[in-house]
Amino acid sequence: MKQLQDLAIKVIASQKEKDLTMWNRITGKNPIWKQTPFLRLLFPFISGITLENKYPIQAGLLIPVLCLSLLLLIICNCISFSTFIGLEWVAGLVIQIAFLSMARILIYVHLDIQSDQSSCYIKGQPNLLLVRLLEDPLQKQNSYKCSAQVKWLTKDHTCFNENERIFIYFSKKPDPRQYSRGCVIIFSKELRPIENFRSISDFDYKKYCRLRHIYSQVFLKENEYSLIAFEKEKSLVSLLNSLRENLRKVIKKYIPGKSENSLLEALMVGFTDDLDPVILKSYADSGVIHIIAISGLHLALICHILQLALQKTGRKKYSKWIKLVLIITSLWGYSVLSGATPSVIRAAAMFTLVLFARNILRETIFINTLASSAFLLLCYDPNWIWDIGFQLSYAAILSLSLFSNPLRELFPLKNRILTSVWNAASVSLAAQILTTPLSIYYFHQFPSYFLIANLLAVPLSSGILIGGILLSIFSFILPLGQFLGWLLGLLIHFLNGFIFYIAKLPGAVITQLTLTLPQLVLFYFIIFCFYRFLILKQKNWLFAGLGIICMSQIILLII
Image (cartoon, rainbow, N blue to C red; front, side):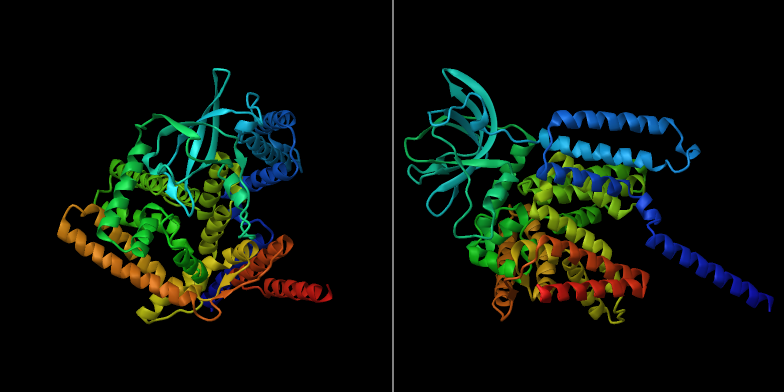
């Protein structure tokens, strides 16, 4: 009898503890919120960026606010508010104001100054501009295009230092391919603002370029420019760029098919200009466009390969740090090698923080690491918050961290093959939960067969990427290089055919979907309710989500 009483007491205590934990989660007293400082700082920081973009304030007013909030923060640290009942919130409010003000000031720090806004520029009159090509000219339909940086503006035999990125379009005669990265040219032609494409009404090309700090373009015909000098870079970045070009030559040498070698160029070094628009559209319509753009998927695979290769380096502290430095250096080297696009930089920053946290703290809170990477990247460039790729990448990562395990546990299977298939399917489904509303909001369409396409495309593209790495390593052995090139060409041809077939199926893409900004926010709130129901197993959250859906449908019917 006594044993039964002890067991009953333990059960009651356990149930009380569960109820208390449940109540703390509902009322916001979850210790996870206290253990994620970057998540708490990210909200006022993003709010400051948004407010400054919509309602700008002069920097002269923001700096005193920031200084005053920092002074109050120092005072709060010196004075113990535990003696003053009800004043503990003051320190938190001061921190929120400080980071909100700092975000608004960062917008001014990163404000772009164009050449035509400088005092020495005279609009409507000849202005000699010295620009340096940042890449080799790429062939387009009627011209050659490359990005360049305005270095100097000459006026009355005086050079004025400038710093603006522009697009240059060269006519095909004379052949501009004789110029390459590092060439300095001079021309006297007015810069034109970038305009949106008339043929593509849904794509805001002007905003796309503005987020990459490019506002102007110029069209140069024959005899409108002259070569001044060639500045060859001597840096690690230039060395990696040269390696990138050599890898492209190896790929074209061993894989002659254009559709095959162009896809491998995109997978390995991030070069997408040679991709066939038809193939690119097929990947987009199938919901697997993410495997072409180098991002977290590619870096995760490379990180896993490096960890396996360095697995037997020892368990001593110095060996762990050497392993960490080698992995992080390789990840950032590959990021620069692949073109250092914002998506790959974000992924590299994420992996760097995760690896550092695991090496130092051993136990990490993933949401805090995710928030810290977003915070640091937005400090580097606050305008990335408006980038669609930035929003989709963080939505995908957050969605995977929240929903992959609950979805995987919905159907516990004993068969190994079915378990592997369901695990892969649950990952694809989890990634779509938070990215689908954004995709509909921006692109107004949804790929119906994304799950089928991802089940084959993701593992096959990973194998192709590994094969491409092996080809680049053993390309000097001619027979082995030819065999790897033939095998990769065969796999890529099969992948392209499979994706093309999926994209042509009836109803492959659901188009003309619309979602307003309030509906987008409401959509995410509904997802939050269902997630809380899935985790807490409480019907109130389920009823709340279903109630919001019913109310929104009734409002739509009335309107």
